[in-house]
Length: 220
Image (cartoon, rainbow, N blue to C red; front, side, top):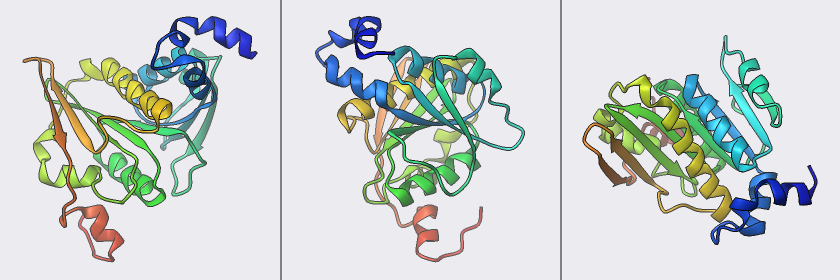
């Protein structure tokens, strides 16, 4: 797609004061790392595609078939890679998953490499979202997790489509501005009551990721 075609297709976004031509160019040239499962993953990919992001690097786990994502978004360049300790450079990462093991593994990888990431998961009647650029190790997702275990209680699958869109929106903010007002915060929204809370995450010596980095043995 030429520059002129891009400007025409996304003209409604380009005229937004917070986006403009330069912002749209950043989205068009972005490569977003995407990991997770189910409808939330599909929803995040749809939101990225509709905004103009042209490339997704999809981290896949065992028995995960990425073909549904490729077929649903033929305009996207989708590169599927196995989950490992090495990932190619990316603009921002999105992890939409209720799998605690996956979230922790990627949290440790991103903080080690100082790579910007957005984590989102169902929680109670709503969802929770954590954003970090991992500039100084902690605070990280596990700083919050170890002190706030109730925020990781089982959530409803009905919020997964919304979850993917919200996570994609936050990643787009990171790509556009290089930072986010939600950075190092957990945003928790309870749809049942309509209450939304932004919880500041602070470093803690109890953080398992930090303890492992320091050579301590941590029970999974």
